[in-house]
Image (cartoon, rainbow, N blue to C red; front, top):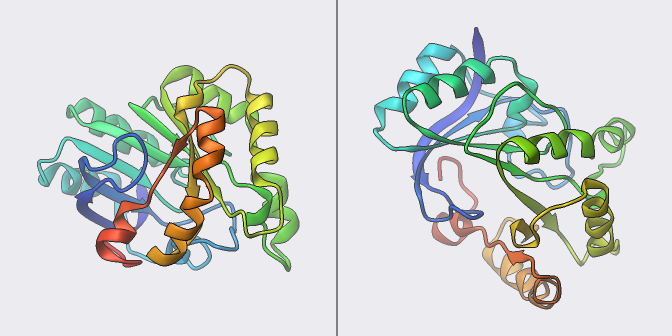
Amino acid sequence: MNLRIAELFASVQGEGIWMGVPSVFVRLSGCNLRCIWCDTPYASWQPEGPVRTVEDVLQECLSHGINHVVVTGGEPMIFDGVVPLVNGLIDAGRTVTIETAGTVDQPITPSLFSISPKLAHSTPDGPWAEQHESRRWNPAVVRAMMDRAGYQLKFVVNLDSGLNDLAEIETMLGELGPHRPDLVMLMPEGRDQATLNRRMKALVAPVMERGWRLCPRMQIELFGDTRGT
């Protein structure tokens, strides 16, 4: 079984509850959504990278000698090859995080589902709009992931968009049912540190009021908007 790999590298986790943890990142190339602000178009809008066997990818992940592996994209859960990759990593004793929008499921149980449901401001204009809008939110899939593994709910928020992101998030959480508020994370949308800082400050009061978390993007602060970080 094969997978198209946009990039595979070692760094520190820059987002979420395991921020700062040394990690191997394997970015699968391809996505079923078309977020207008996508920061990895080379794994979504214009998928890049060589097609490799699952065994080859698995062995490179293990060769780094790092316990934590992040399987990301694009959208890794649209590929059947993610199942033997993740199961192989688990069998080798690795701790696995899956970065996903929570629109498609696969029969795998990682240590952590990092679920990032897409809000209305992610929908592009043009021919992709209808398809993206119809796919971006699947509460049944998100709930299934939450029920079988560790999870965090990471929402990319842009209060400049003119849309009420906070009300939309609260509606989504209501559709999901029971959840831990401290695992709900607001991450500002942006690809440069100045924009992130400005938008992050605007999120302090909302997370304080609701018992949610503020989620920085440490990789942007450390390295800028660059691949392999």
